Length: 287
Image (tube, rainbow, N blue to C red; front, side):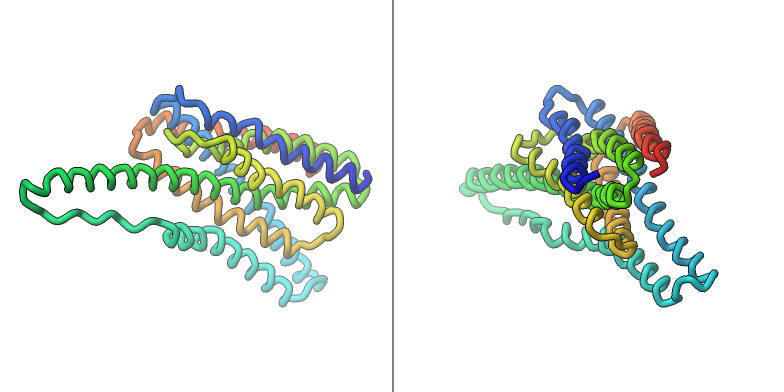
């Protein structure tokens, strides 16, 4: 498979993430439906979390086997373990630090005043409420982009697998990987817009989220075709795993106020199962 064909098919695999994004524009969903969609996205993200970490740990296990058989150095194994730990920490705790730094400071309560100032205070409170609603909206959109970035890191690693397979001449494997990742990425759009709740994103925001989440598949295909590097792949798996874990916690906390606990858990299971089913195509092809 030529470089141009590989890159084109890698772009197609990443583009399918746009299929689920328009759901975020629907405003006919009630609280129950919003919880169902958000928790369905949590199930998908939970599967991606398991998938990326299992792939990352597999790289470390392979190096450990090499050390046991004196085919790899201990220093290389230690380096991989460090990459796994540092990447995971950067993806989870690092995102928490960034989110806290970007969080607007809490609104100040106006001082108690006499009746003459009641109208002015009421106006200030109304303005503060508007600012608070706007801050909540921006926070939801920021969470959505964080999810897109975490998925994008995961998709970059998927693109690496496509590129490496095509470069090595495993055409059938590369084809199955592209089909499998295309189907899998189609469900990831729900993972991005599910936690937005009542916030209606613009088409421009959806396009940006799609590029952040799906574009790395295209970039990873290019890199994978030209470069093969286990440490690079491990670093991306680790960062993606940590970021996805952080995002799952954020969505879970955000959805608790709506209730519908049993429905939410059922949809988490459904999302996880869908992730498994789409991944089976890749596994069947030997990926």
